[in-house]
Image 1 (tube, rainbow, N blue to C red):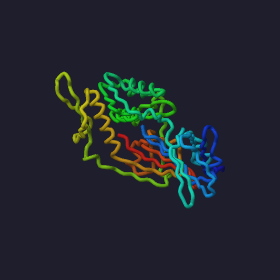
Image 2 (cartoon, helix red, strand yellow):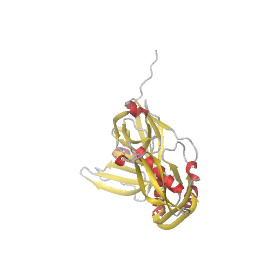
Image 3 (cartoon, helix red, strand yellow):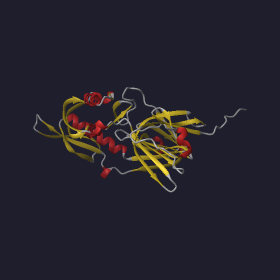
Image 4 (cartoon, rainbow, N blue to C red):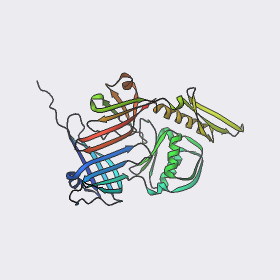
Length: 337
């Protein structure tokens, strides 16, 4: 009888600067490498902490771009190979001691400075797809608005002294979507979508209780017990305000008055979906990290409590860390309605 041989897991990572690997220089000094991935417009963050006992460590200069890959060389229960996690602009360096250590912090390189420039613009009688295309065009990006949202009409949206980043963040909230920049593309997709902006199916993660070194589930009372949402709009033909609503009987009223019934309906549905996702959370620490797990991915879990296993989950954030214990991953999950 032949039994499967258990192979010890060996984590791996690579950091490059201008195409040149820094891994062999950093590795003997590495204390920790942490990558925090967030959903939507929040920039991903990279932090590398190294020993500098001899004062000889030369950190990458501020403004330089580091590319990072994480993964496994081999091992039972892991997927071998490195996962490219993208580029990061070095924006903060610090030194402290004793013992002497240097910290290098960097943010996702996809967010351009032009995104933070405030402008004034009024968008009228257009679509989400057209807005995404116009904003992408002025920043030299490829527009990728999800098919579910591209044809959604926008009666009026005012970009009053707001940066394109802030305006897209507000617009995404109205439609319960996320807006981000990845690999030269401006991406606008619904939260919880099962396909990418290009139509490709998103993979689903599977996590069992045995994969976790720690787990924490929490059910939260909805804000003031609210189980629905309502929004007002100005009916130009009737000359008065009207209300649309979604969900249960104890509704949260949105403060803004929208330009059309369609805009108000989208906003009320988006708020209702946010209230539902906030009703329960699940935090998981994976003993063997998995850099393939990213924010926005659907996850099924098993061997926890029956009500936890039965729920549908969505990754809200993922923190991957490489240190003396190897590669680990911490996930924050939201429940899907």
